[in-house]
Length: 79
Image (tube, rainbow, N blue to C red; front, side, top):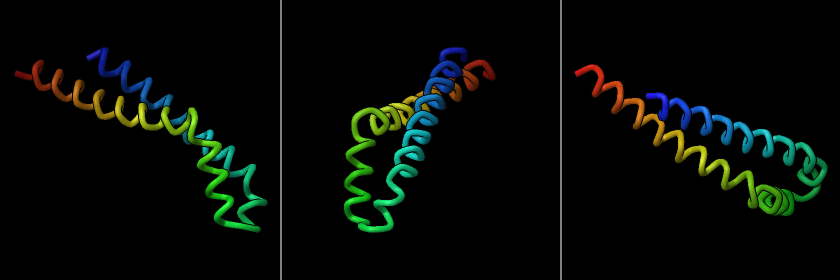
């Protein structure tokens, strides 16, 4: 059960990091969004692709794994 909780904490930290990075980049590109929407989304993807994108994907995968681990371990302890 503790492994599942540790994975859950790591997943939430990774997802929070990706979300905060997205908000920071979106705020900095707000003037570009007013002028040209296509270049806004291209710059947004360009800025988020290296680390925040992969940390979000890893966080989502770890979240699913941790939920499965917690459910299986609680089910095994129940029976």
